[in-house]
Image (cartoon, rainbow, N blue to C red; front, side, top):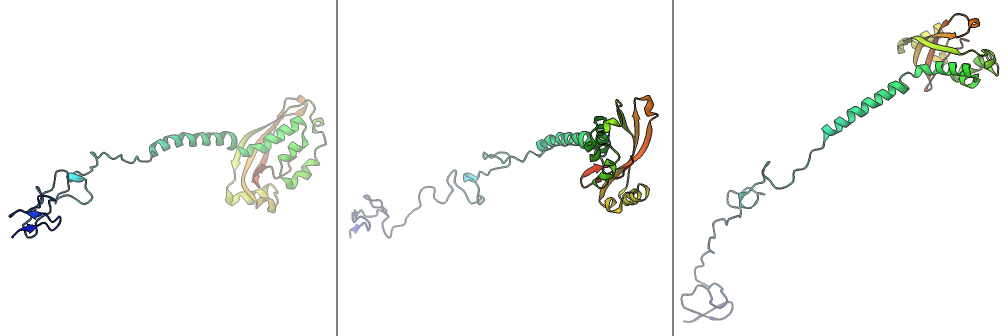
Length: 223
């Protein structure tokens, strides 16, 4: 009895497993697998292939992969750059900002030599500026005509925070209201001299300087 292809309707030859016209398998005939079916093709994952692996069992190893490895952040380079920068900042602080306690003495010396009352008053705490200004005339250059005053710091003592307030109030008559606001304090030994015979021998004064409201000032009137 003749058989016909279920797909295209062509007459099938007896014993055919596939339609010679369209290639469809004949119903009821055993169908063999495609050549090589059941064995992994070259380059395709086999039974031993790991999930996520490359075709053919090729795995991207730590040293043999073709993908680019993400570069680590260059911490060593940053450290090499940062160290010199920090050193430069420290040097600048030491040169320009490390001796702020000397500024009141520098202002006092410059103000006296230039006859600048305002600059002299900047060296003192605002709370005693009025008493200091009473000591000077409007033109203080008249007090030291043709004389160059030299104020040299020859010694210093930094006061500890625990004893700072007591020393300032008891030994230097700094008011309690001012002493409580002091952040840092030094006792300076300042030598006052001038190249003039009439001026006399150099005089050494103990002058306290304090950091008050962000500025270094002299908190007492020693004039």
